[in-house]
Length: 278
Image 1: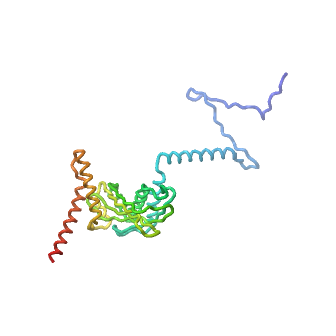
Image 2: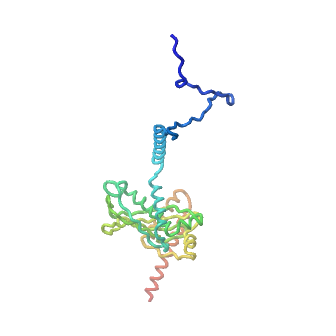
Image 3: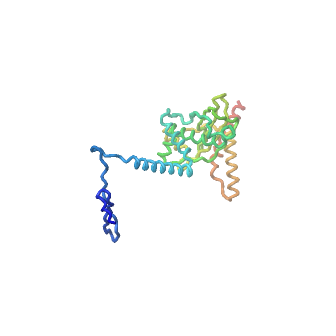
């Protein structure tokens, strides 16, 4: 039985092939869009598929980032630095900065703020302080870098879920190689200092004196060392000496700090003797 030949409308057209560099490849033709009353008709199904592919790809990239990096940390750092631009600058280098905070669900451990979160919040507060008082600007000009050399924290009372607090940060003293900062968590409920932390911020490829001289356009005298800070610096020096002795190295990293502490103690003893003689 002879079947009729298919009409031109339903005939399958095979694209011709050309020989390119020894390989047969099909010729790519431009497909004209469908028109209705002179207006092109969009293929919504195809657009929806492309949008879904883009969304899936973006979700995959975000999932990879959150699995491999602490994304929330970098977002908080950017928020702290950018937010500091819209706040009043801290003209006094030794001035105190207060940053408000609140204990959220991601911060709690057994109903109260996790111990590691205290140090994390202190990082953000230091970034904000350095942006407001110009230390970051001076470090960029002097090509210096700030790294944490030591921290110690004392937890006096737990901060519970939803409790508001203020994180007060200030530069206390400095020596030839590092700044020494104090950071306090003050509860907004009763005004109690819930935690206090000391931080040693080492300066790489420069010195605190050069940074302060760049900011103040003059030499800035270091204030007196508080008694509790002197004990903490002595502990750092003793720990460094013990570790270097185990490695057979000579301790040179904390000699300047110890010398400054001794100078402060000698000055205090001399003043005490003068007062006693009077």
